[in-house]
Image 1: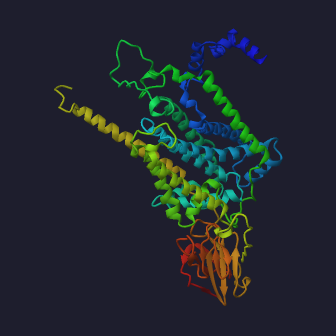
Image 2 (image 1 turned 45 degrees about the vertical axis):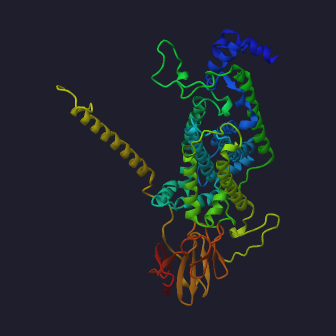
Length: 424
Length: 156
């Protein structure tokens, strides 16, 4: 019945004006459906079978995008009640928990989606590394990806202060103090971030502006370019055998007797050019269906988490008594563990070196072998180096999360920590 | 312009135009960046003052170490001498707790001895000691803007 109504509407004069193509019936209309729709035209009319394989991409990029959308929607909803004031913020969080209809669920969704997004973006980066997908011509898209990863962390960090509870206050006190250790500009950066010398109203105002407009705008723009580049760089990476064999057309050598669409001037070859037709399927319905299914799955998982687990809210921020131990969110606990040895080396030098290495990676690793397959044998050395870094990062995070107790001393998670004596 | 262009294809007028253009553009970019950073840097901060009165000397019993919450300092009295040590960890700004005779930071485990010097942990410097003076109305006056050595006392 709904399909009938839809079919009837799509073929009325009004429906035609909106959708141009009705529900596609032929291959031509399947292509037109993709090309003539604003929302769909970002994607190709036909897509390689390999790109659809869930075992290759794990859908992580798309999951990150969906989480970003969920975060935008729930974030805007939260903005309708939240007030970025040190006097009101915490009370507003309590209102969201106990007074606003569905406020608890919206806040929970926002929090869990944020955690999941950090996870999915990090895993997406691992996937792209282990499949060698950052290699030519996709180097710059990897750089954009690193930028998006950092923006995601920045969004979580700025969002952390907003509830104005103990966790918020001390995580930001510690985090901005780490910034203060950077050579030369450190103290200045810290002062600019906080808008003062201590975490107070100025800091809350600034973090709010960064969290609700500056960083989301940057992230949104970078996501748009990131997705656009996926297509312009020839679609998702594929194994050598399925890569296009047609030579790309150098600019300035275009035959003048042919009319080329702008999309054919992309660097390299697009998936549509010179391909064995058997290797490709129509995006409508193969790609669209999978995308919608994944969206449903992501929303379901976030909703499930939000309904059954509440986002933590500690006591109201108290500038005098840090909780013991004062811990950052889990994805910063590896960093905090490093910082507990040395703020300068662990908080500034190691992260800067890591980010620099990630940014330069596609330009240093120039071999083109082993693209498009997981753990390709040709890339053993690169994979081992990356895995070692990854294992160390995960191990530090686990230590910081589970094995550090009061006074940041060693504890074992399955035994209660010893009682602490706080003389005053 | 009359005459032919030099070999590199840039005329005198073109050279000046380019130079002026780039200079103007660079100046505009730098000026905008500087002004923006300057705008973001507050000229007035709404934070508690650095100098405060801590009551009468006799409010603190002999041999006591008192935590002044709002100011995040410990006031140390021994006999007739008064000292004031910061409770802000030099590592990443957490508030330290008393632990035994010294101080201990709950965030990353830095330990300081009685004199505020680092005993263990990641703290790069010892805790700061602040100047303690006596105001005209016989109140302890502490100035957190003035650091002193740990052996500087106020004797009342």
